[in-house]
Length: 188
Image 1 (cartoon, rainbow, N blue to C red):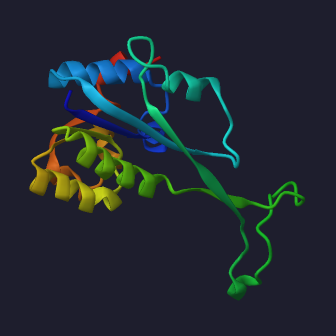
Image 2: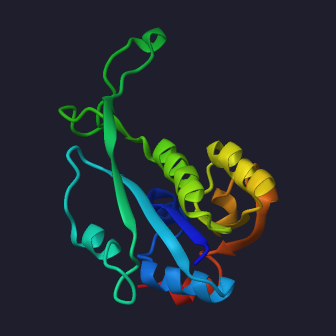
């Protein structure tokens, strides 16, 4: 068993807005690489405190009935939006309902958690294939280290438009989940 599978749930949703079947994703990766997933992690953010959902429960069901992820749910940070001081500094309000102030919701901790658990998992389990369902260039350093210093083969999963040009040179292959034939195979 030499595959480490790491999924940024928000990235996958942006790459493939239809519901993806993560068990089919796992099976497709194992078939393509002729190997078995050793550890699989799914990272996402949710309200504080995280809600227990049917989807989250499904993600943790072990194969062959589920994708068998170790679930890591981080928090959302919400911040009310205001115009810059040069434009008055007033709250940014809904155009037809001024009782609604716009706010920015951002996930916090997902990228750091994914990088931490990815490197930790490698040094504990010594898998030789990294399947990364994330495209953020912030993963460049840990990925570069695993590929160049530890001889790990990197496989990226996502949409070409969402995968950073900083990660692409390290990939042995990119599985484009928004393109055929994978697109049809992974739909729920």
